[in-house]
Length: 432
Image 1 (tube, rainbow, N blue to C red):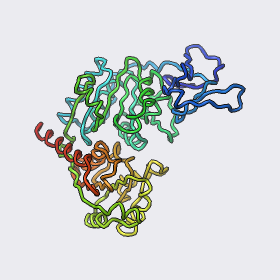
Image 2 (cartoon, one colour; image 1 turned 90 degrees about the vertical axis):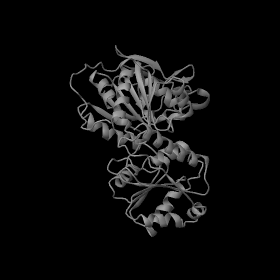
Image 3 (cartoon, helix red, strand yellow; image 1 turned 45 degrees about the vertical axis):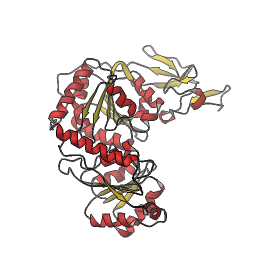
Image 4 (cartoon, rainbow, N blue to C red; image 1 turned 60 degrees about the horizontal axis):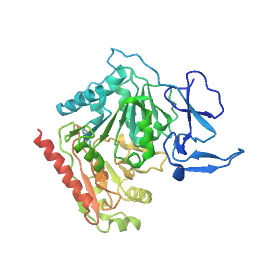
């Protein structure tokens, strides 16, 4: 039994049963699923067939689609509404969160197509969404929650399963073994939206400014097509792009702005530490003296250490084990065991976790410090720095911590990060 609202590939000459619609894999030499242009992303191949055919390379992550195939599709299930409150959350929103939650719910009830929640890191954006998600679910609607990366997707999935335990859910990403079977709540990475067409009444896009979503027209195209014509999308970020800010300022994009963390404490202001020799030491296989001294001075702290190059991870892990503490590991996008390592750090089985920007956002840890090595590197733009700094002080029981940026010279991004975080703190204090 094939799931509804999802696109299914079949041979082009396959007979279709009543109630199913068909769509071509390509339309005017454009991939129907992700919108890729033939000149850039589609190549001609011959592979055991009499005639050449085309397939799209952009959306291979969800399976090859070629011109010898077609899509079949049925409209999503029409569920009945319920009077049962599906939200099982014992917490409560702050007054500021509650105002935004109500505004959002009212906006989507009135058919608002897009709504942006611009809130600082640790403001409780997910909790603000609960009432709106519950509204759609209780009215029989289909909801998708998109996270930019697999680790963030898994983290959100765990949280939503706790508060919507009576709702059928599925978590989809490239390495998950789960298969969509008409679940009402879908938590997924963005490429998984290529599997759907006009399937969701509400799509929430977390960290909408993050790579790869922000720079991929194909991911944006697929997400838009997965939304019903009458559906709503909610965009979330602490660091909107210039274009997004412009749309908010000019009234094109309805939004709410929250400068305060849910626990009421200020954002942690990073400290800049000049270390001209740090990068050179790491490249020579020597632990930088200033990093070593700082870690030894704070011997009871658990620290997330960011490096700009994947190649630095293994050498720094080795050096830390030899000189500071053996309870250390490293993760990157290439690491097949990163979920296990992230969980080990979260449960304090690891003292140090060396990482790339893959953990800059979307994951939560309790009572940690952050160190950024080579913080002057071009990879660390303003948004990345703010997101990294936002990993600290997120828990109401541990609302403080340290963010240390070792650099060989202040950059505009470093200076802007300090300025913007202080601005948020000032505005939050002024608002009471």
